[in-house]
Image 1 (cartoon, one colour):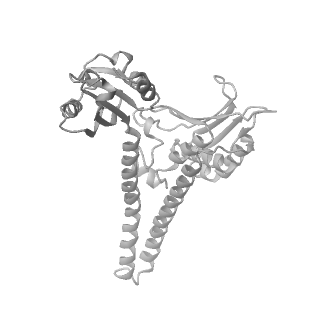
Image 2 (cartoon, helix red, strand yellow):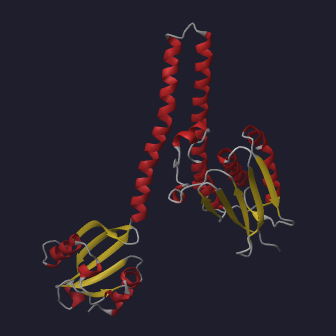
Length: 348
């Protein structure tokens, strides 16, 4: 058995650590291993705790002294697939009473692999989003230089289309810069105290031209004596402008977008600001992914409306910085409710 001093050191580690004997029976599991794989793991066979043949084979090579250390990655099926970096090392005989022992460490690196995949997806998405308008612009320019060179009607039409594509790329780049800025600062919470009533009324006034065009009414209900919140006024304006504008664009003509700001009845010291539309609603399978970058339910419709696919991702990151969160309720055919929950500013 391991010395007490060694056990104390291993128990202080944040990664899961097991010590196995020559028959691959677990003789020790540190606190992190017991929490992650179960407190009853000690005295179990390694394969029953870590059901992966590659783990068993790596341990066998080390225990037989074929190799001193073996490192590999393995993915275990948990509630969701979880990827571990596993290192198997033969223990010094002085630590184990001259018995064959190996130590296995398992570090959860799922977040690293997920981040890498997100980066790959992000680059692919940005390339795709920019390629379409750039291809269109190139085609329009070639046409204006050739067949439509002396055609004023075609020239006017193509220039309008080129302007739309240029504006779309400008919006996309602007949203990408906003996301980058937000991610760089989201660990630092805002310090200012702001009045949500003022912000919401300003946003509603700015969106009236769009609501008139879409033949949709905006109705605002703000509770009396609404508490102040700690936040960045410009960023919160961006949140509610995005949510309310989405509500207008996706609502049916002749309906209302209802905004309600009130104290959250289910939680002390928290405000709930809800934006309810009367649109087609959202299939439940899409809701968990709505705040992902470039995720769209209907890509064609979103682009036609001028969307970049980044609006709700920006909302999410702003709310993370404000220590707040977004909740989405929707029923097909009945519309959706986007609710923002913000902590109330502490009063002296």
